[in-house]
Amino acid sequence: MSLTCGVDEAGRGPLAGAVYAAAVILPEAHGIKGLADSKKLTAKKRERLYDEICQTALAWSVAKASPKEIDELNILWATMLAMQRAVAGLSLMPHEVLVDGNRVPELNIPARAIVQGDALIEVISAASILAKVSRDREATELDSLYPGYGFARHKGYGTREHLDALTRLGPTPVHRQSFAPVRLAAAQGSLW
Figure 1: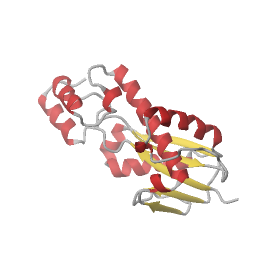
Figure 2: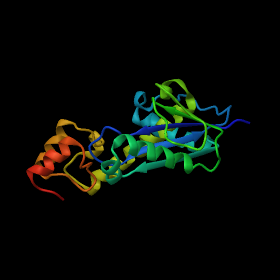
Figure 3: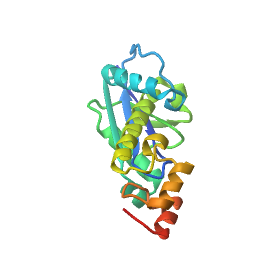
């Protein structure tokens, strides 16, 4: 049996929080209905599929790179690090890794990038869903830790609400200091 692993990330664009990656190995006849690019699914459907993927997968792993790692490495290399961690966290070693996008992390396993793979290949769609749900759950946690920013609503993206909160309240420890709007807010004043 050939074990193919799908890998995808979530959270490259937000101004705060970690970048997440997931790695999933599904059985050939997995029977999961509705797998698709996580961005095309409702939050409720993603949550339902998250549970089904975790119960059905032969192996799965979710990993992240912290805001500090993002600032030190840059978002691209932090994303690659999260992907490496996700693959390393699998309980089974895959024979091949399929990564959504146009780049692959450095791995000791054959890997290839597939542009729009999260919409084309079910095992990548599954990884997309695990990464997105994990990232959204973190945003909800950040919302209770740092009230006033609206993390549960905008998930850390640079919405008007978030930018206004940054100007008013300053960056938190979970903001990505290397991102321009956060640097600008830090230069203007208050920090947590």
